[in-house]
Image 1 (cartoon, helix red, strand yellow):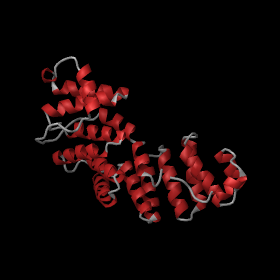
Image 2 (cartoon, helix red, strand yellow):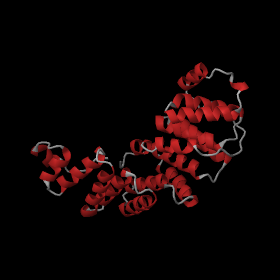
Image 3 (cartoon, one colour):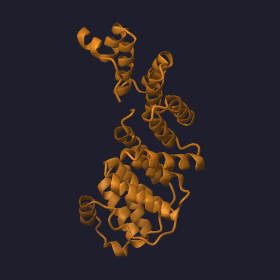
Image 4 (cartoon, helix red, strand yellow):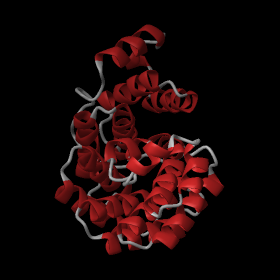
Length: 268
């Protein structure tokens, strides 16, 4: 990563991104090893479970094992295998992107950023690496640098909906809600089944004073995921702002009238 809380919203996408990366193909060129990209815990777990000495395993086997661990949700083991592969063959941009995404999901932003930038040293025009760099920078509060990376990612691949979403977040955080709305609508054109995008759009529309379309966007988000609590809270707060307290009570689980009257803004 829903808005404007980039650290929380961006990590919602890491699991999906990792699952897509498992099926991708590696490429690139560099001269650095994998040292420094793994945490101590992940290294210990990998050493305990690897079985065959690392220097006797083909690099492709390590990547395959990492992908299998990733598919099971075992991030520590996946990270170990990826870093082990990079220590013997650092010329793998995709593997670095996987490492960066794992660190990003776990909130280790500095290691995440390092991995994405090493991937970019291999492939400067890789939109996945640029997107990862941009989202990590956004989580770190480096708004302008994040914007530059995400804009490059979109210029190279207009279907990078997470980059479009990040640019929408940055626009809203900068007070440019019209631009935010445009970015979120572009992202929705690419990914129509992502509830978070409709929630982001609803919030931008709310900030722009377009309450009718804001309500519609929140309802769209809840239509895709009825249990999406943040969209429900934002919709409830919108109803409070409009003075529709009965509707707000229904959406928010019937809080007290006094509490409803005190609610005047949506939440991120």
